[in-house]
Length: 338
Image (cartoon, helix red, strand yellow):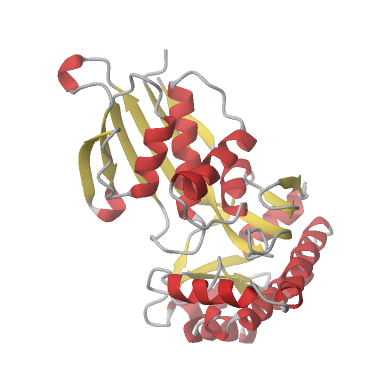
């Protein structure tokens, strides 16, 4: 019987079509790229009664400097997503320890929360002796956010974490989704590994109020007019990747960012625009504000064949950090267990 397990899951960038994978869009299309390193979950079950009572979890979240023990039937709400997933998916009689580690800064707009949930649920299923089914794990992670906690969440982040790779998703109607893996050539994967540059803007993504404003704005007669360019950008991005055309891929991302700004100008922050302008001057083919947009978070650039000068220029801007992310053909997977 498995007593401990480590699971890794990627995060995602360049999510063309984001905003259309939501309940208020109704239907949509998203093309995203999974990247590593993302998140890692370590989970261990304790059999010894001296460790603590059944239904007790020791939770360690190093990124927040937080460690505490709690009863599953009385979660304290310090990390609601993780506590909800543990309460829902820990098997009967579970007691143990869980560590949540992330290689990207909190609030990066890279779907990190969804990746944590996917990896955690996969780890708990492995401890219970179940198999890791990407579709089941992705849906379970989405349900934790939307059903257990009543939060708003699109469907794409969980799928990127569970499946990995690059996918075109078609959502119709929400939350039903079909996953179309793009099956990229080795040459395209290699080019993406060289040319994709992701920049952290120096502060967490914080724009809940702005997003509520956008959602309210989208529930009128102009919804389709505003969302249609995002769906188009997703399909153009997928076609470009399948054809190995990173120039066209970058152009699709630029079109998507313009469509984001049309939803609300503040979704593309002034600093994000600086990054995009610097990238353009250094020969990039395009780029996108990751996630829903707003202040903070990250921007990913489809850079030139040799992005060295671009990376140097971006790294010289105070407060910015170039993240060491690479395309991840694999989704959530067990990397060690015993």
